[in-house]
View 1 (cartoon, rainbow, N blue to C red):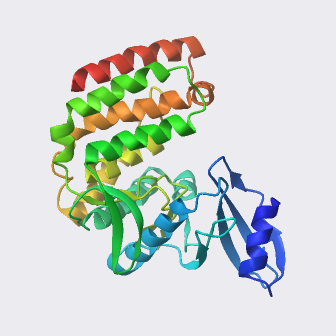
View 2: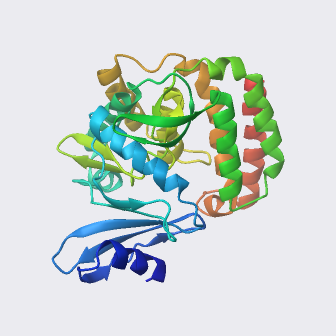
View 3: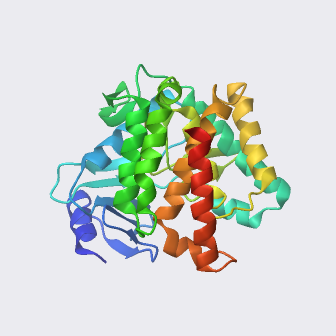
Length: 318
C-alpha cells in the first residue's frame, strides 16, 4: 500500500489496527482512493490528493456537508478531513446499498429502468437547490457554499482545461480550440441557464442504490452550474462515448424519474443539450486510445467517424 495512505491512517486513527486494504485502489496523478478495513470490521474510504493540492478535497468536503443538511440526497459521512495536511486527505464512511452499476448488471430490463428512475429523482432533488451565480465551489459547509463566481460559459471552458489535463491521448487536440470557440458562440444561451448544484460525476460507480433511493459519493468535481449539464452527464458517462448503442429504456427512465421530482426536465434542455454533446465527444477524444480498443470497428474507422461527427456537432451549434 502506498505509504501516503498509511501515514494518513496513522494520523487519523492512531489507536486502531488496520486489517487490510481492498484490492481496488484507485490512484491517478491527482487523487488516490482506497477502501480500508479495520480489525473490528469497520470499513472506511481514504482519499488523498496525490499532487498535494488539497483545494479539491476542501470543496468536496464542503459540498457533502451542504447536501447532507439541505438536500434529500444520501451522501457519505465525513469522518475526517484536512485539506492543508502534508498529504491532504478526506476519510468517509461507506454509503448504504450497492453501486448502481452492480444493481443494473444483476437486473432485468425493468430493474434497470427502476434504478435509473431513482437516479433521475436524486439529480432533480439536487438541482432544486438554486444559487445566485454559477461558479466553482471553494469551501463552506452546511450553512452555505463559498462559490468563486463566474459565468457558466467560463466554468464550462474551465472544464475543457481539466479534460486536457487528464487526457490520455492527444490525437484530437486540434479540436479543443474549435470547441471553446463554439461555446463562446453560445455564451448567451449558456449563461442564461439556472445556477444549481451539480454533482458532475454521477456515473453508476459513484451512485449507490438503497431501498429505492440513490445516494452519491465522490463530490470532488461538484460545482454550481447548469442542471441540463448535470442531467446530461449521466448520458455522457453511462451510455458510451464512441458510436454508442444507448439503452433507450434506461435513458427514458432517467428522465421520467427527473420529471417525477422536478415536474419537467430543466428549462432549455433541448436548446443546450447539443452544446453538451460537443463537450461529450471531446471527452471521448481525450481517451481515444483506450476507448477505441473496445469498439467493434477498427481504430482507423473509429477515428474517421470521430472526425466527421465532431465536425458535424460543432457546425450544428455555431
